[in-house]
Length: 81
Image 1 (cartoon, rainbow, N blue to C red):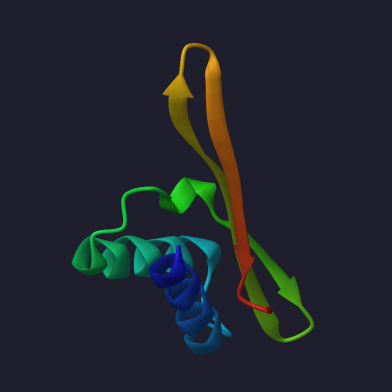
Image 2: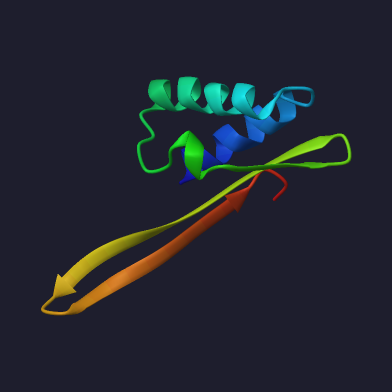
């Protein structure tokens, strides 16, 4: 999670004039190096706020405990946070 959060922050800062496809490509390149597999480039929500690029993602981690009980953890981050 922390690596993904750092990555979207860096990409958003560096990609003020980049297209959505360029941002997705930058994500794929950086996460291939950092071995982030939980979030794909299709999971990113990319928007503009004035001249700033905002990148965010959200996902759920499910951890089975026993029988039909489990633990669910929702993660979300934004490049603006």
